[in-house]
Image (cartoon, rainbow, N blue to C red; front, side, top):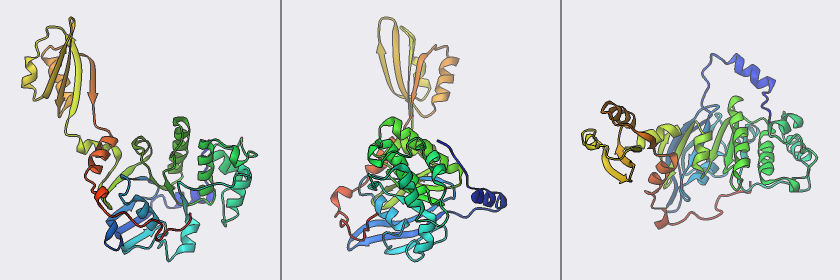
Length: 338
């Protein structure tokens, strides 16, 4: 796959090199209610230009409703959304010219070839990117004559993304972009999404794959019960919520471990064999523990340090949801075909 930058965007980037770039998406006090049910509750969020931003949350957390409000498929009960300074509902024509949405359930015309599909959707825009260029970007330049129904699942996902990108949008919204793909196809799609960052394209995506969020996103927001309960870079979210680490190591049989009592470790577990002792402890500072063990002459090997992952943080936060006891959001209300 090839990453290409349009001349117009490159010129604009150069001329604005010293000018602060305004945020791509600004959400303030956003709320959406259906009678007594609150689907989105007082969400305030800023997504910077060129950022790959992930919206995470358990089923029923309000992610889809929030996305629909951002792209103008629903109107907010209160609060405001501005995308590139535009109101997604009132400034509809200008909005759709600069923002592309690729929903999870989107379909292709099975009888059209890759070239015909890209050409068709390019015809809907005033200044689309060249079809050949887009085919190279999405890695389908060797399948231009292949009909959509003959493409693999990963190739179809890439073509759908090509359809979204053919109009050279400034903002791309992706709903579960890699759902149902095998690991190889997922990584190919990740490479394509990552390449958008280099063009200055803002990407907002939803996903249930925590490894995907960690690999792609500059920042993520975790929603629970309609509100954002955490927002930061994936690594920072993990670091901030990691209360301790589990450290395991092996020492020779008979090694005196009394020093562990002086090092502030907890949950000490020792598994003895004829030749070795496998030790596991919990600590708030794994690096310092390793240093202190060495200074006390305790020779360790097979050292392993277990840390929390983004999935651990997600599960911890999602466990606070009371969604299962709430009234579910009315299906189809306010929705349009996408």
